[in-house]
Length: 373
Image (cartoon, rainbow, N blue to C red; front, side, top):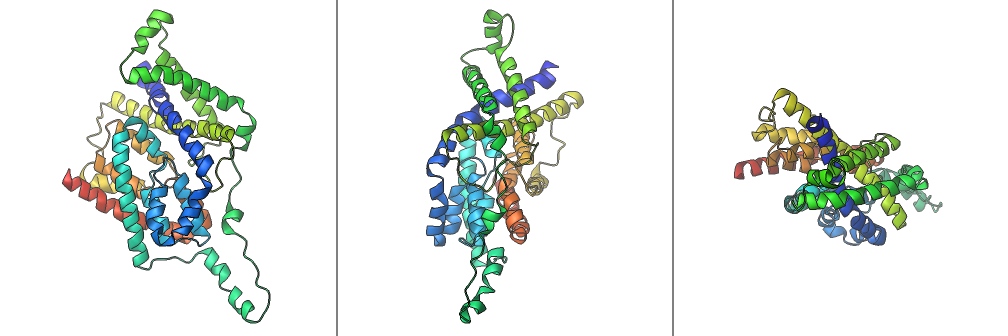
């Protein structure tokens, strides 16, 4: 039971959640401090739109891509820039990969930025530009201006469509975020030395804690608390919205705890599922259709699913040894993270076409990587 269920649950919190927490705070602080300048930079450098949009997705998570979607929806950047961001983003799966293999994640980021920018420029050069709501609103205003009648000012689409902040209740009750960060701190004091093989948690537990393994104990409590956060937030498949940057460090920490919990839950699902599959059936993954060109197609098709949940599970399976790199690359290019969800609400025609367009470079690059490796 311990190795079958408890160990994977503890690993999800100690191997991924703790390291995600170490990254969430500095990135959250940077978003709080300079986030409002990002969309301004995107609008100022419209000709470099696809490249700038791809670069905005370099930080982990979906925030950069969501910024591009909101700017695109109000007509400030081209459709190519939106496609570039969707191709380049890794969503919340980047937290999982970054915690496990920073070098590989950096290499993937470089590949995604280059692929995203190139795809965006091709889309713009081909003249692909679905009609947006803002274009429809602006068109009837021309006759009114010609007759001298006052021209109505259209209501900003993004502001009207922005969903209510789902984290309000969580911020009002500061106890849970504080408890999560205390637990993450305790987890870091055990997980970091264990990762670098400086200490054996089990031996430490036998010597000082009456036989209780601190790694297993903290990891299990952390995963249970993460599930509590997940249930409190409605078990959503996406954890980002189009609304603005955090306005205080308290909000950064609250949202950070939320992010850690979201990632931990879906990584735990991947780890437990893989543990049950391999232990109970002897299945080693070699029979899965994730090898060769079939694997590239599977990765690209899984990337069509909106939100980050399935993509986090997919990355977890890769880290567990369940698929080759070419399959993962096809998935990271095809997936749009949480950014596609607000785009579906704001510009459904653009979003549906984007799911097709992002799949093309996913299959091409994944197949090329398959041939080269």
